[in-house]
Image 1 (cartoon, rainbow, N blue to C red):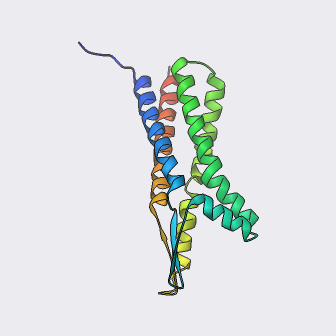
Image 2 (image 1 turned 135 degrees about the vertical axis):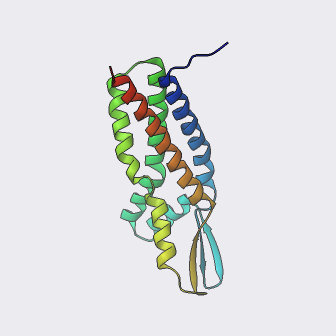
Image 3 (image 1 turned 45 degrees about the horizontal axis):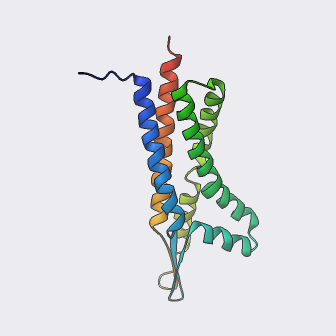
Length: 167
């Protein structure tokens, strides 16, 4: 017996798989250390939230807001949006909302790696030999994989919408 799955269903299953995997990886990405700083012989591991709090307490409210938006708000919005798009696609409802939301998710996707780039810049700038170093930690890698999975989910949904629009 052969089960016939349409291409649309294939794209939805693939997008759902990437989205669920991204959700499961996003949780430890916020709990584990994002970077490790060694300053004057002392090691300090910081989570994303610790970094935001330190920036805010240091008077860098603009930078703290950018990191908060890029690391917390945008990924949560993107994950919830992808899940909404997949659900409404499956039930074939809210086509206009789904299409607009997918365009927005694709647009904000280019800003998804902002916090990972921030750590890369810090690692490059703060290399003072034994005096001070910064290194990426497990959460930065997890967040990078989350971004990749959300991009793949978004691409799968875009393929699904392209296929639906072809007569």
